[in-house]
Image: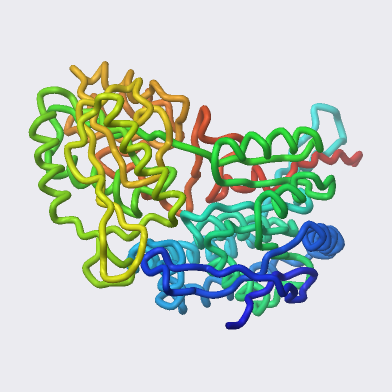
Length: 477
């Protein structure tokens, strides 16, 4: 099998490789991908540093053309790349193709942003002096991405980094290197100069740590666990570098008595269980007022009976497997914890057998949960959700906000009064009304509050806040 190598200073290098295994069928090896060493990572950082002066001053049409060609190829290959994504991560094929299209749209958006780079010209408070405010690239940007969105998250970090003139050292999650390798290959063939983008696949303890330890990495954008995010922050403070963190979530979805039941059920089931619940925006706390509680729980149970858990590539599958054995154990451990804490496992939570060996788990729905249980406080990152009964809207809002996280928050209601109040008072970076908590647009800001995020927002024009630094210049007329 051909080894997919790392890209360092424009050269494909690396011989030691690990297997990328399909979680829907563990007998299926997606490919073999090189594992970078600390020395490889140092070489990648040096290459990015050397390439920065020329790339940071490159023409906007050159950057536009490269990002646009990349977008066009991703969209043209959406079925192929979507299938690769589903094989390596376990999302259904429809979800894999949808995520791939989103990645193409992100590159297309930032291709346009290359042509919209702007500053300000202001009069000084002093006579005969002009003031110019411009944005310049930060330098070498370290990008560390998670396994749950193998093509979209790399896209929304790499595209703005290149758009604004930075060079990149990119470390994807070791579990899902395939889509990341494909994006880098497309960018190289689109004409990206040597050293501007460097791909170093491998262990976080080796590759990621080397990036954190380097004074030549001027900014790091990280999406992943809260624990690792804290390490990124501490190391970045040591080097006085910019850092951006997207970490955990324990997102609430509130259902009020006046909600349209069918809308509430579909939004809750999608929020909690689709993409196997492996989304930082997934809702694993469903907070339901007592007047609709029993009808809502019964309707969700009926809806879950029709949900098909199977091979991600099989037609008719609604939910694919959990990503690997370690994550599956974490999910089942939390199901056991919830039962020991006194919550009722009302539906699912069983390991499933299918035609191919894989990490299959039926969606687990707890009832009679309270907000102080571990299943209500800690991020599980799987198809496990807990229903919390509350008296009224005021208690629902208080419970929704009673969490150390603050990424996404949702509500199902037909009341304009409650929807408006919730949008203003939900302590989250993103709020959804009568929509799943997971599912966002590519051209608007993404990010949260409290323990979920740190730093400026990702995506859309707001990305320039992280990937650029502001310069103010004064000129005597």
